[in-house]
Length: 197
Image (tube, rainbow, N blue to C red; front, side, top):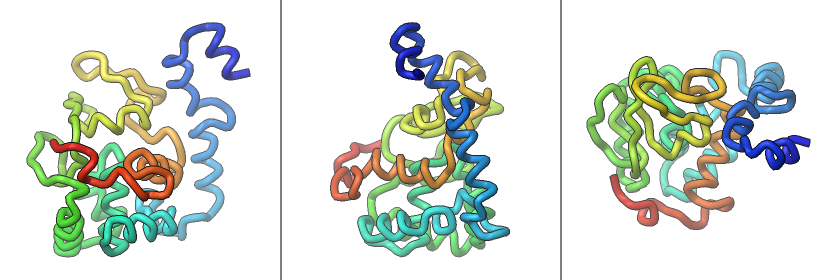
């Protein structure tokens, strides 16, 4: 039915933008996931070591790093606001531990270090950057589609929620980002294939 509505109306972008809000869509799946107890009490879905440990293990093997660095990579690759403050809260890291993990991840070449206004972090995916205005944080352009966001002008964006928020359960978004960057089995699309900043 949904495909037929899209085909008949020609409103593909607009309809896909509201898809997370529909019954069975991303928001519904997020609510079911929250009730499932899949992540231990006190832990965060935004910590992939808690929400998708199998993917973290796969990413660690592919990148040649430990699970903490693999988790940080998945956060940088997926989340709209993996600021240093957020990452430390989600992962229960001290500033010292965060710096150690960041250095390990930077050694892979899968991310780059840079200074970018209002980003709140120094590690980024290689590639294009979108300067969103407050109250939104700027982010990697590659993340706009997964968050169903289209910048319009000034601080105005088109999105299902009016803000840059997840459109599906985070364990699904981590898996989608990994597949986008490395293929389904993580066997290709390494950092050397993705260009530079």
